[in-house]
Amino acid sequence: MTDLFRLDGKVAVVTGGGRGIGVMIARGLLQAGASVYLSSRKKAELDAAVAELSPLGSVHAIPADLGTADGVDALAADLAGREDKIHALFNNAGAAWGAPLGEFPESGFDKVMNVNVKGVFLLTRALVPLLTAGASEGDPARVVNTGSIDGIVPPGKGRDNFSYSASKAAVHMLTQHLAGELAPQILVNAIAPGLFESRMTKELLRAGSDAVGSFLPLGRIGQPDDMAGIAVFLASRASSYITGAVIPVDGGVTVIR
Image (tube, rainbow, N blue to C red):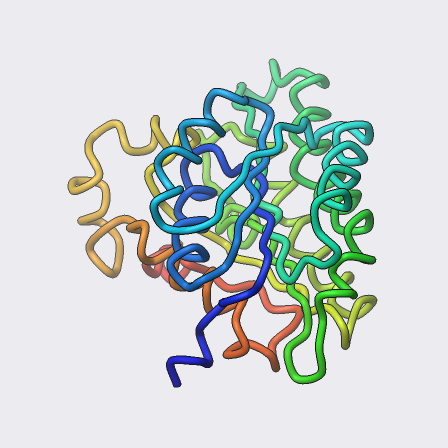
């Protein structure tokens, strides 16, 4: 049973890996034995994440802007120059924008869609050869996309993140579409997080994580181990018969909305 969840000898890529959920995912993968490449736009954040995580295992940083085709191509080329196979890709890079309906800018809509949807598609496509090389009989390669509960149920009046919720719903459908396209060599699933501490949820947690969490069915917001656990499961042999799934990791928020 222990071997079922181990990732020894596997190589994983985590985008949006400089902070928040990306670091939570990377920590779990490293603790399970994987080697991890982190990528995001901000080199300083990546360097800090590598310094924090390096005691746990082999972790490297590759800065890239995944909201652009050039950035995606650069990351894919860099990875191909370092590895001959990749076993798991976590498409976690994300952008958000908030503004009232009448003031929401086209540029804000475009930025969020470019990073959250187009970037996921382009990077997955670019890494298919390395992922296929990492697949084996009984243990396919993995793509895990970070969606959101905002892509499952509407955020509600006053939550002016129109492009974000739309982009995450698109990520969920893209996950299912790619799952059918890439099976059986590559499994494609999505995580739909609820409230975890991150830069994106800072305003939502302004009253304090304990106060906000007390209103959720499970009585708390998400913790790093909650994200690490689902990430390791979806990267490991334990999930080798699951593809096209969108898994809420939300403490029950989608039950009460």
